[in-house]
Length: 289
Figure 1 (tube, rainbow, N blue to C red):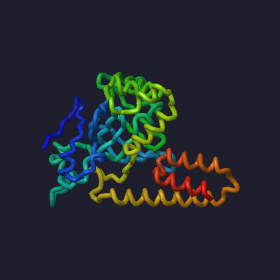
Figure 2 (figure 1 turned 90 degrees about the vertical axis):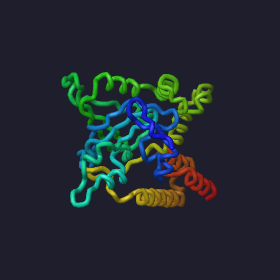
Figure 3 (figure 1 turned 45 degrees about the vertical axis):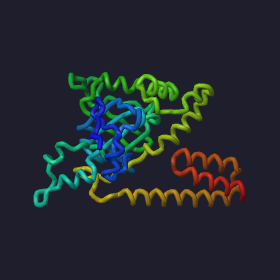
Figure 4 (figure 1 turned 180 degrees about the horizontal axis):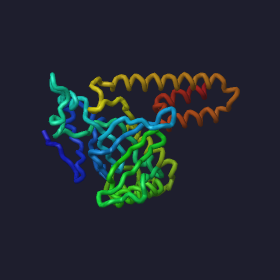
């Protein structure tokens, strides 16, 4: 069996044999897939916050690992198995047992191309030392904020320069400058048509598995209860509610034109609230009603 392989940033590359042996979902752990390239990693000090109904941010997890790659931004903690192995009966959780473990269990993931325009903010323009300065990175779409202390100014500028690019220039940069050649296999097709809307929709479809959030966290990492099934159930319930809502709207189409309804369906699909199968079924029912 192959040993774990890490890149120059200390991010582990995918190891299908090892993941299969340990019976774990490789998408749930921070593993570089194919030609995916690391752009930045903070392995110790990043804090994740979630915005509450009152507009204030609540700490979700301290000292997690934040990784930005050519394809996604991830925030990871110790895995449920790692937490269990760190527990000593009669003593509690041992920091010593965590010493050689990776914080690689992803609790937040977001496609990098959706971060374009979402720049890193310096919390204090004058507070830059040899060790760097404190910064904030807000993902407003997900009500998530990261605070990263001691980040080098050059690193901040480099990331912000990338996030300031137009979508087509960003994809080109990732594929040909950073050598993530598998990021967008249909690049030659885009080069011929220059269809930016199609480029965005294809990226959204191909990277949908990189967009998720698992906010149930304890001070040691993820709670020991495996919440994968509950999250799946919640997604199914949410999806079913969306379908029921669409069916209700379809029955009232005397108030809205069919084209309006189709636009709503497309919007829900683009946001990931409907799968391809659900979208097709709802569209067929709308057109046949």
